[in-house]
Image 1 (cartoon, rainbow, N blue to C red):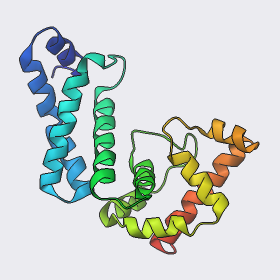
Image 2 (spheres, one colour):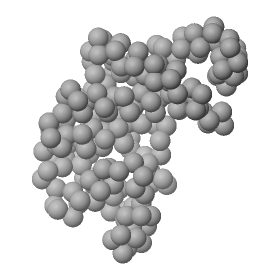
Image 3 (cartoon, one colour):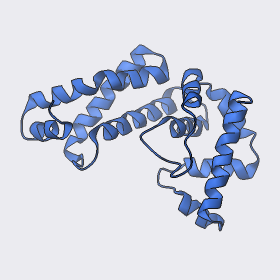
Amino acid sequence: MIKDEQLIKNYLGGDEEAISILINRYLKEVYLYFLKRLNNSIEAEDLTQETFVKMWRNLEKFDQKRNFRAWLFTIAKNSLIDFLRKHRTTEGLAKEVAFSQFINEEEESILDDIPTLDPSVIEQIEENENWQKLETIISELPIAQRELLLSYLQSNDVTFQKLAQENNISVNTLKARYYRLVQKIRKLFFGSN
């Protein structure tokens, strides 16, 4: 099997068939990613097509040192978030979508060295897609906890280090608070598990 990186080089070198092989390699996986999260085959097909168009348009910018699959699924994740913001959200719900993505994406280790959430919890969130309940839980959090959660989620470039510095506390203290907050939200969302 030809590696992804070689297919990209071949395509950029003029081999039109290489892009077809690359798309066919990931087409079903990307489609199932959207279908699982949206439970709508038409929307999943549209977003799959959009993802591959974005991939094709930006292929020349792709850093060959990166993992292609991870890069492709970053495009897919961003397309999903954009779609949900435009079509399925009420004001403020985009933050909950971002929170859901935060606990769903295995490729990204946003919690650094904090233990990951139990996979069964992730599956339950994906299956339920109960955004209203999550929105209510977050809105009822104490102000300090809600601000911590939202300040971490509202910007792609915010880090624990940056937030710790802004709040004049240690990084480990902030990580511990954030982890306890995620655990609290999980408990409120699913009941006592």
